[in-house]
Image 1 (cartoon, rainbow, N blue to C red):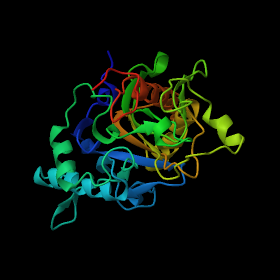
Image 2 (tube, rainbow, N blue to C red; image 1 turned 90 degrees about the vertical axis):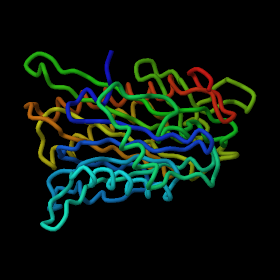
Image 3 (cartoon, one colour; image 1 turned 135 degrees about the vertical axis):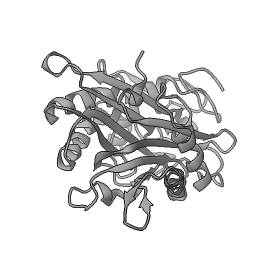
Image 4 (tube, rainbow, N blue to C red; image 1 turned 60 degrees about the horizontal axis):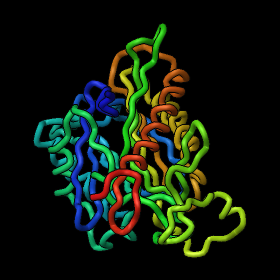
Length: 323
């Protein structure tokens, strides 16, 4: 069985989960450094330190990524990841101190659990301390604790989502190369099976029904009763053991975004803050186009797992076991 994102050597994943406030944080550590690129498709993204991944930025690698709930308040959690790494002597050598480079991205979950519950610096440090290279814990954990999907008719008709992770192995001349993905799915739209187009989780007909309606069709009719414009965002981290430059990692993030479009509809809306971060943490050789095909597959699989493994909680139904 795949371990998910941690199939890539040098990548560790840890969660901190608030079961009462229904929010949390996920830390992805690359302590030896990883070349990174980013692709922002949604129009409601919340982030910090994304310039570190700009090909023109002076730094060559980052040391971690922090994904958190709590809207903009959750950006504080990245400070905890930095503090954890600093204590281990990991970071960019400035000559006077080592500064860990940790981009952060957030999703909006304040309308699901407690609006007063937000990931803090301590939450981020706890997630980083829990990070390991074992199988990624999936479902309603970490940044996916308060994640939901299908909100064109408001939160009362939504479904529970969470975090999923998957890995795709290349073959033939590229045997040994792999691409993995982790997704925290909190979309406005529905999650569909990329093979059949069937809606797996999304907007329900009513609060007491499990009949799913087509959110894209609803939006085309202009019917957005109960629509919430701020409660969405899908956050994705892709990692590979192939060696990439910053421009190539940026291209990989762009190609990986195809996997988001394959599984979420509607996607990249004015009300979603969709982000894909790509990490290169290896020395294998592979064309970025081949990596992009694998990345799109891994992202699609991770998103599907994020809803299939999400339990019913907080008054919303999920496809996984109840909590």
